[in-house]
Image (cartoon, rainbow, N blue to C red; front, side, top):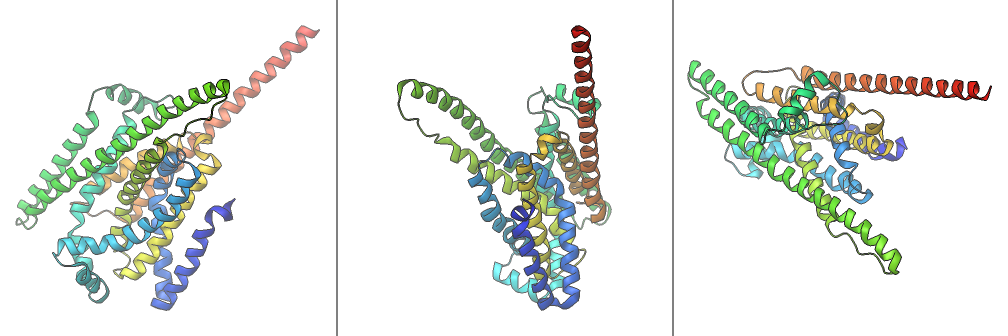
Length: 382
């Protein structure tokens, strides 16, 4: 099971490390290995959240996620995305941006760093909306009840998550503009960029998430209708009709997953510049990490881990909320990538431990109930 799920990841790791040695020697090997670990640690929460969505999709779309999705994630976000950032921010063509990335690495890194406020605002708002919509939803299973119970009641207010997200964005942009004025006004224009990018992230979430939710609801309706028609067909001896909405629902869920993965990868791409400004080594390291995140997602789905450890999804969404806040803070202040990675690992580890304790408590309660039933049967038999 492990080899089947992680086989491609192992193969890509071997090829990537060999390529790193040929390209940059043993120093390149070390850089790629470190970047791979960085990407996995920063994106473990991504895998848990992805698994919650992917389990609703059939085997075909899971394969699409692991093939086409990997191409988008590895080549799109880890290789093309940094080049696009430079091309847009420096107002140059893509070929010039690639030439700059390969031949003038210091200037390339400077341009990507300069574009960070816009990237962080877009990704931060997208992730913040995911967290807010999760935390404001009334759930049967609650992890931190003292937080989730009152917030679920507040969530009954329409558009509350959008209002909070916009308030956070306004505060961030205003603080950034004020700080720029106090330090000579060098980045005053960036405040407007932060505001526009944040709104773009919010709109992207609402469009993609809205379409995904709409077609998911349609799929459920079609499944109910199909079930009724199957029962009727069995009685009348007629063939059943196909569910035409399943493809659309799966497509928009796939699209939602790709945007989600893109938002998660922002911190990894930006954080990678703290280790290297070589775009080839960066693509190799982050690409290997992205493969493991995707394989881990499928593994969680096939093993039913989210069903067995019910608080994992909660922990992952709290990690998303933390990452959203961190991204918004990094617009103005620098935060070490180790801290970013550890926050997610700690929250998911805590939720996993809470899930294990819950399972043990339920098992103990069932054991006691069975024991009391046996005693009752024995006493009644006597």
